[in-house]
Length: 192
Image (cartoon, rainbow, N blue to C red; front, side):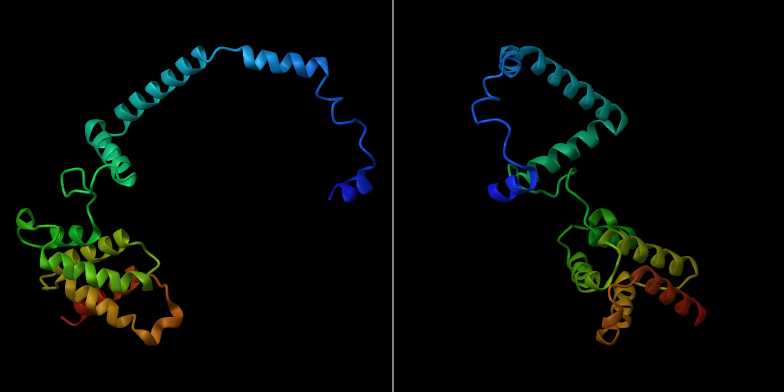
């Protein structure tokens, strides 16, 4: 490697010790080493405090802070993930909470939520959208059908979308599942 570099650029102009003994470099090294760390640490802490308070004030206050701390602690496995007020809402729970009559009595581990999770697990590899966008499309479809007086459970919507994206359509995966769900709504409203 050194030979190819020397062949390209020519022999080196300095020997190994020449550039290390230069007075300008020696002064620069002592200047860097002589600076105290106190002011740097104080400035860093001040900037971190200002950034924290700005974030706290502009992005939601205590709820945002609780979510961020909970996320950091669960991501580093210092605290277990709980289903408390700071726990992340899953897409299947979001669908269930928006489409059942009594969302207060719904638990994150209810059989209906687990059924929706299984359907989303089956459908999500076929879709371009993430699970939350898919959940929003299902909720929108449910609301559109309910406003027209049609009964449609989110399970039936997800099942119909999954059937449409069967193994025969594998070459078009991932596809826009929101469009598939919108076609299901259009067909059900036209049939009425």
